[in-house]
Length: 464
Ligand SMILES: Cc1ncc(COP(=O)(O)O)c(C=O)c1O
Image (cartoon, rainbow, N blue to C red; front, side, top):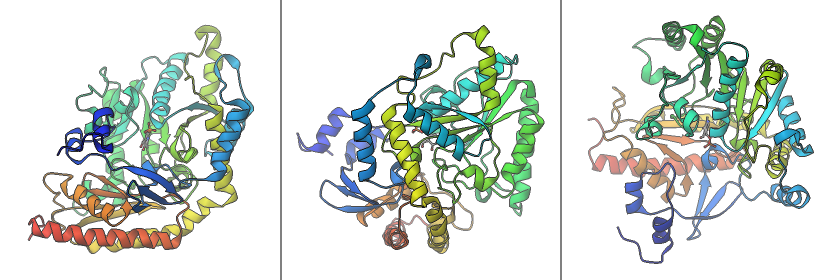
């Protein structure tokens, strides 16, 4: 397709390299142009309204156009638009946010390191684990285990932790050197053996993790990283007893647990953190996204005190702790983050999300019997519907992603934004969504699925 010269679509194609986009298809379809947003609604350049079903990229927990946050950023820009944290410099708004996070996260006694994105937070995690094992005299203990389909970002180390083929293919990732390993995807519906209970499946996965660590040599394995609920890998909710069993294996081999709360943090799973929902006792935590509700780019790595103390003890020998970004602890981002956390508390938004969760999950579960649907899964205010060609055999569509893209098209036509992860339709609305809007979301999805089914039948895509 060619776009009219000078049109916004033509200008987009001419100027922008789109992240995480099929560039060939983009040449044909052009961009979806969003112009403004307010609350849980977005509007395109034709004025069409969409209900935001994915909170941007799992991040805009407070929705759009929040006046208080805009004012907070403005005031902070006037007072102290920038200040660094390098070389012992500091500022109060950064200290206050670090104090607040220490108070909130399920990690006893801790220190907070600020960055700008989930990816750099996880790159920081890798560097801190390596630094830690170097300074405490275990230079060979460096390997980090992620999971197939895990998503931890796309920078070199975070992308190596990620277990999704498109993040690796063509980018020469995972990084060479054998330091990045991946263990099983904990997806019971897809990966369990016939008749295997969730508990038995979790035991098998923990045993496989144990075997992997033994094979590699426990003295070479430093850390394990996991999202409590896997987001970009298709919203995979862990099977019962999974984290309990995984943590027993990690403890046996003195392997650190890095908890990636970039999506699950701040009320998403019905508790303040995914770690609370699943009984995770982490050694360090990655935060981003809802930390500022995406009003500013900001991430945080929270480490336990023991790790920090090892860094301090090593200072005479190591000299300067040589890690940090120009924008580590950017005062405007910190001020917005603090205000966001204040609003979560003041407006009881974690409680609100937990109260809406049963309705959200019940509406989601209604799609279980839909002819296009294999599995429905979720927890709190996050969920997904997996589309299959054959409900009985769970056979996926071929080629993968075509039906998901079609369903998404019908969602857009019906005024709903969600995400097609291949053939998994994912939902993660802003935490401020109301009960009526949850109904609106799934009413729209129902209409989209009805049109998509008609199309799929016309194409003969479903098993007879
Ligand atoms: C669990 C998780 N970790 C890390 C990241 C990377 O964050 P960013 O895109 O801000 O680099 C993401 C992004 O979706 C994520 O979902």
